[in-house]
Image 1 (cartoon, one colour):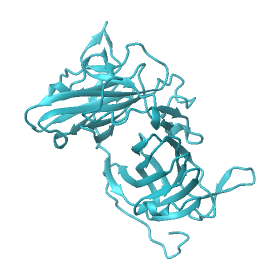
Image 2: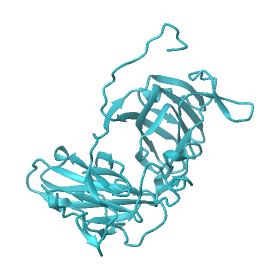
Image 3: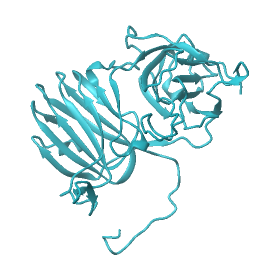
Image 4: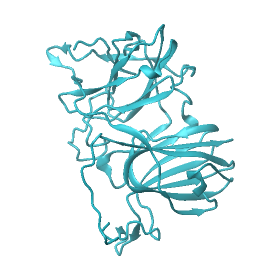
Length: 364
């Protein structure tokens, strides 16, 4: 299939570092017809249309093919002005062959530079080219995992430095600049040498995303009771530290989304993900005993979010794998109202073909 969209980035110069960019493009349509888009990135994208989250991708490829996802976005368009936007993360090429764990998830094969690509036959105005705008996401800091380095980075987000509502149609574009075309579609050659992004349609199903509810809270502590958050909202007073352990009932792959509001900056939110409760071992390292014994502690990787003023939603870029989520809140001079905590289960659409039941509860 011939393509006309071009690969875009902020610069043609390769950079051996981790990068996070925002992209956006406004366009006008008279009528809404069935609209499918093809989208890919080096290395990862989160796509939005008119401020609505669409998907995270693409399927992971290798040195010889870059997969693109095909998404039906008809329901998210309307007659008149629309905006398509994406946050894209680029991890540098791991020339050491996944030996250093310093270049992001070892399952990703990355190019020498970042790139974003989107093609829409029904609405060519959406095609990526030099008319798109982009800017650095200066609020993101990549944090190498402490234990599961092969799985990739965690994140630290400075909410005060972020561009609020950057993906919304009415968001100001003062911080954005025109993109640069870094490569044509995959049917072009440069001096007889293929470009590094040889596009191929995704050949496995898209991951589903659906809401999931935790089974409850297993532990809480500190200067505020955060357990009511699962059924409503809770306010943490100034100069207070509190935590709650949310139990999903089993190990899950899920996106975590936290809504909150505060009148001033200075708060800190920590999300710690654990497979189970653990206990200090003789050598100082944690050991696993009874997995749901809340007398133990949660040892795991962490995402950190520093609050900005006003209402806001924090959701880590990637899904996380956990049974227990420890949500820790540290307030500064202002209170923080936690207004919602939700989860979206994700995975491949595989049918469950079997299970295990045992009379012995220690086995079950």
